[in-house]
Length: 365
Ligand SMILES: Nc1ncnc2c1ncn2[C@@H]1O[C@H](COP(=O)(O)OP(=O)(O)OP(=O)(O)O)[C@@H](O)[C@H]1O
Ligand SMILES: [Mg+2]
Image (cartoon, rainbow, N blue to C red; front, top):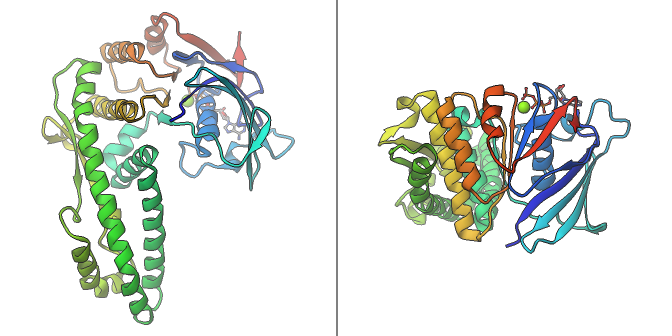
């Protein structure tokens, strides 16, 4: 698999950023500056260029476009380095209804497959407090690792939406149609659940190890799937859907299936949401993410680009230092932002780190 590191970026009309050329190294890049100057916007621009999407929910072209933009078009010009150390110029032009991509000046139909892990300060809170955030987390990262899972999940989501639409109308008219399509829904349910279980098994050895490596504390961290589908055959899933059909008709939606799954993060065997302090929750969450990054590398022999938006909150200075030391030992490309002067002092210790100072959307030299 091709892997990429970003070497240069210039954006036109993206949020408050001026079209300066920003240069990155292949290791640790610290993006520094006071509040509201554009640090997060740089990470978001890279995320949008790499994945078409923001890390922010419900943010798309109208939010990305600079309020001072003369033309309703955002241009991302960039240089990436692939695993053969070849430089690739990559441009993306985004308007409200289309995105065009150019590799070395030549239009291409599909975007480059740039793998990114984005870590933002609220993720830990969301992950611990909301089941839908946990589901989204798992689906997003597992999809990035497994194209088949991504496709099956898309099929399942579509089939489920269709079923729910029928259920919310006059269900008695559509019962036959619902029953006829439940076979496919059951097969997909089985597959998705089995793949989730497998993924959690794959990531588990990395999680325990990562926590120990970053925070040098002996805690057992595990993640488990809470699902009503585990060990149920496709035939039985279909039977349960049929048994539930009357109640689903009354409720107007499907009450059984992998869309109801949940995940539990266990800290020394206890639910981290109930048991852990905010700092411990953050450490657990970061360990889970870095475990994912290691699993990614184990599978693909290359790392994703890691974008870390100020994660210093809730962690004490000792933990910051451990985290920075951990990042220093890794081989992945990291872009990390902070407005926190004390955390910046920790980042300043990193030898060879690239420092990018941002003021009013511009790079300060
Ligand atoms: N569409 C837009 N057009 C112009 N400016 C925008 C747009 N969207 C957001 N901004 C501006 O971008 C700035 C926010 O930038 P960003 O979130 O990157 O700051 P930051 O440096 O990460 O700050 P903090 O340290 O507080 O996280 C704000 O000043 C905001 O007004
Ligand atoms: Mg920010």
